[in-house]
Image 1: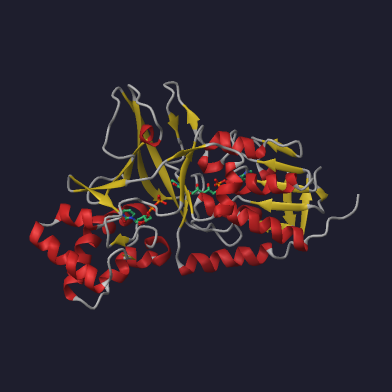
Image 2: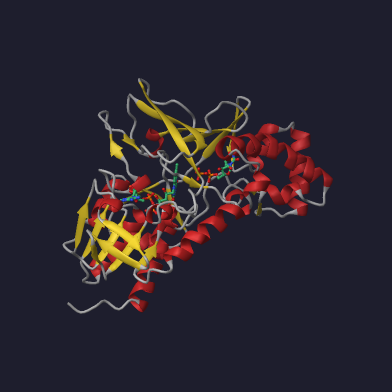
Length: 385
Ligand code: FAD
Ligand code: UDP
C-alpha cells in the first residue's frame, strides 16, 4: 500500500494528490462515488450540453497561484458571472447595485438614494446588507430595509431556515451591495470556466503515474481509527491519511452529526434555445426553490435545446448529500470536538469542505490543499521501508 492515502477525489483531494505525485510520492486516492471531482463533477448530456449535477459551479479567484496551478490542467473560456434577482416578477441585477436601484425606484427617489449612498458610503464601495441596516442615516436604513426584504430575507430563509442576521457576516459578505454600476457576481481577477468542464480538468490533475485511483470505495470499508492509530484492512498504517469526507464518519458520529443543508435538484431539458435572461436567476421573493440555473449560458455556442435546474434546500438527513455546513457557534463548537479527536492521530489530516466543516469555494479548496501539502512536507517523517 502507498504511504499516502487520500479519501475523496474532489478538488481538495485531487490537488493534494497531484502535489505529492509531482514530488515523487506514491498516492492512493479513494472515493465512494463512481465519479471524480466531488461536487464539481460535470458531464456532457446526450444533447451535447455540459450539466453540473451537484449545482452550478463557476470558477473565480484572486489567487494567481491557484489559477496558475489549475491552468496546467485545462484551457479556459473567459466567463463573467451575472445573476438576476426575480423580485415579484421584475428582474434586477444582484449583487444589488445602482442599476438595480434605478430599476426598483422611481427616478427622482433613485437619484436621491444614489446621492446619499455616494456621500455616506462612497462611489465604488461595497457594503454588506447587515452593515447597511445598521447605518446611522435613516434614509439609508430605509433603503437597506427594501433590499433586505426583497433580496435577502426570503432567499436566506429558503436556503438556511435562518435569518440573515443569524447567519453572520461570512455568508452575507458573499453577496454585498455595490455603490456602483458593478453587476458581476464576483469581482475576482480570474473568472473562467474550464473549456471542457471541471471533470476533464480534475481527471487531468489525477492523471499521473504516482496516483492510483480507487472509485466506488468507501473509506469505512478499508480504514479504521482507534486510540490514535489508523488501520488499513486491519493492519496498523504508519503512512498518512488525508480525509476530505465528513469528519464525524471517522469517529462513528460519537458526538452526533454536524448539521448541513442539503439540496434537491430538479432538472429539465427544454426544446428551445434559451429559457431565461441570465445563467442564474435568484427567486428572492417567491417560489419554494431558491434559484434557476441555465447551463447553456455558461458555455459558448447556441443550441436548439437548453437545460435548467431548480434548487430546493432542506435540512440534511444522514442519508442525504451534505452540501452546506451551517455556520453557527454551536455547530463550530461541535466540530471542534471532532477536530480535537482527530488531533490525537499524528498521521491524520483533515482537508476540504466537509472535513474542515467550512463553506469554501473551489479556489480555497485548492489553496488549502497547497497549504496542507506544505504542512505535511514540513512536519511528517515517513518511515523507511
Ligand atoms: P467535495 O467536492 O465534497 O469532495 C469530497 C469527496 O469526498 C466526494 O467526492 C465524496 O464522494 C468523497 N467522500 C466523502 N466521504 C467519503 C468516504 N467515506 N469514502 C470515500 N470517499 C468519500 N465553489 C466555487 O468556487 N464556485 C461555485 O460556483 C460553487 N458553487 C457551488 C454550488 C453548490 C450547490 C455547492 C454545494 C458548492 C459549490 N461550490 C462552489 C463549492 C465547491 O463545491 C467546493 O469548494 C469544492 O467542491 C470542495 O471540494 P472538496 O474536495 O473539499 O469537497
Ligand atoms: N443571498 C440572498 N439573496 C440572493 C443571493 C444570496 O439572500 O439573491 C444570501 C443567501 O443567504 C445565500 C448567501 O447569500 O445562501 C450566499 O449566496 P451565494 O450566491 O454565494 O450562495 P451559493 O452560490 O454558495 O449557494
